[in-house]
Length: 274
Image (cartoon, rainbow, N blue to C red; front, side, top):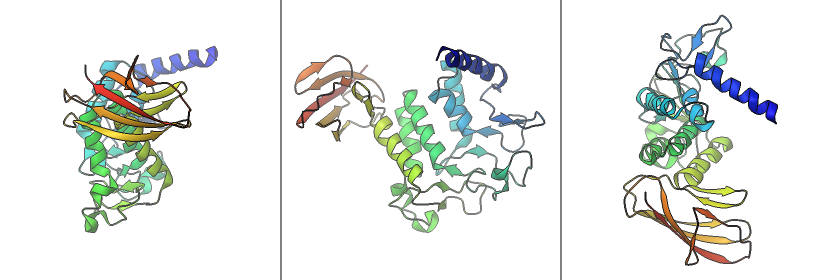
């Protein structure tokens, strides 16, 4: 274990030394040494995953996390969600592989790829940016997109694997519906990170990261042979932060609900605050 942890630290140091491009992280290098996802690139200038993964995996400083996410928001967040990278490749690049062989803006070639878009939501939540997390969620939510059926083109009641990006002639069109991985990630991002109700080894964590104009919400959650009726109140209209948690009327230290497993229902009250 210690060997792997030591190697991880060396990898983090290398990423920050060689992978930082000034405002964002590069995605990779080709076999000839040229970078992917760099300011020096005319196509594939900035990649989404390289920015969000720096937050998800805690591989850099808070300042760089902040800058990388802001660069992703500025350059990649489009009308129907964050695209995988931008600009799209206009012709195949044999040094890259199959993603450049898709038409521009389609699937991995500059489209909105749902897995990666969900990781962007989680990254925003980890940074406490509830307004932006929900904004991203809303832009590619199939329920919202289904309000434009002749543009979205696909079913509004399942999650699509991708949506064509702005470099596509079918900008906004969904594809690869009934994609179980995308559906699972969207559910995970919404319930476990925006609503912030996450199973932990030692209990149920209540850690919402919501739009600041939400006054609160309610969730019924089954967890390890008990049912929790959770009511979250947001009196200060903030995006992130839990002030007090009560379990069946008794105040709980912190925001972790202990494991009860008694086959009963329990009332949980959560008050958000600084």
